[in-house]
Length: 636
Ligand code: ADP
Ligand code: ZN
Image (tube, rainbow, N blue to C red):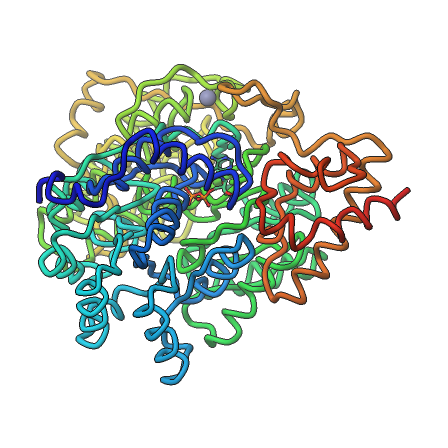
């Protein structure tokens, strides 16, 4: 669909710009567009299709909300926002109501009468944004509704959120997304904007193909999240390591802990709770009410730690999540980036902390090998896992690698573990050769294969029953690696797995086998470099001087306030909590911490003093100014 055919939608560019800017300040209380927002908004408002790749917290929602509001004001009806997150629609729409925008959702939580009422309002052109899940949007009834709206000229835009869900290469594949091609086929003149916070090249191409977005303009923002400090530590006792991390660095703060299995989620949530941390479990096996309730508590209460499987987190827009911890390794870099990206949406300092070990590598490899997928598919999955292993084993800047994966060049960041504390390296070629030749010798001797533990026992010269039973004392490598600790040998094996010089045989109890690449290591053609194990976290990490935002220079530390201002800030927070409870919304939907901090600093005496504070739109000013002034006055 050429853009010109939609030109009737376009207004004069300058006029459009002025009105977009005025909506930005009036509705959202912001004075400037961020990054490519303005270009995206203008493109979409002029009838173009767009594919938007912007990191979490980058400000994607505004890219469709603002054109939707502008169209609605011009009498062109509603934008339909397709979002997979029924459990969050209430809060998303509630946030728009707070800003004075006519938004609604249609989902399974409503009865027929309620849905009917919303449909009628849509047909009268009273709604600016309608949220619905993909499975709903593609039903005959919904499509008939869209037909009626379209016939009346009341269908302004389709916004497809979390669009990576359309791709099997994305980490959240949802088959329902595939059916969304119907929108383009049936309503070719309605512009579409598709958005995601993560998509590597292969996923991106898949999105374009699946949703026929070939004509769409792609807007790619920098994927960097400078306020997030990436750290990957070696697993020893992961539960104790996690406890230490939270207690030392993030007491009383909100965070997410990702685990692979439901059982582990429950177990870790228990351990944290027993240690006095407000931890709650979340996984797909929990009763829907419990799940929703835990999610609500995480969003609405302060300092809750959510222990979760990857079922949790998409669309969670809580701005003050101070850390994301991984106790198990994700499947690929997209998953890692997406999950860690949930930290620090407010732009203040946050931690992405992962604890990983040999077993993670073995497990992930095995899951791929055991999956019933086709071989080419498995090859892609292995490639993606290898990229993540490369990141985990890296001794250079993590961020440089992460961004390179998304096709972005950068310089060492100064805000990851490797930059802050460059790891010492050692040449591990010798023990690597010992391990490989042990595998080789056993195979030649008996045609048998063994797991990591047994191989390490042989090298370290342990007289276990298993060794005696299989006569492995007679191997020439028995006891040859006694000088190496078990942790060191584990590191060597991990590195060999990451290099593909050894493979896990899933069909045979996770035993280890040689590969084509093993020979190069055995011959000494490639050097196996290993970071020296750090049992304890180096002192400087987690303390250190606070990082600064490279582009704006603003410190990424939690907000600094004078004593008086702090008292006002706390009183404002208490007031906000009451309002949030009354409205059944998360507190940050009423005002962000940053907005309350500006108010506290300014100590406003009049409504004029409140104008121009970031996050204070006209509707909020009307609704809350007198209360805010009262709280500030009472605070003395
Ligand atoms: P995303 O969906 O990309 O993760 P959001 O749309 O939730 O991000 O935006 C992240 C935060 O940034 C929100 O709190 C939003 O209000 C804020 N924001 C977005 N655009 C601007 C802007 N132009 N100026 C100031 N704040 C903005
Ligand atoms: Zn770095």
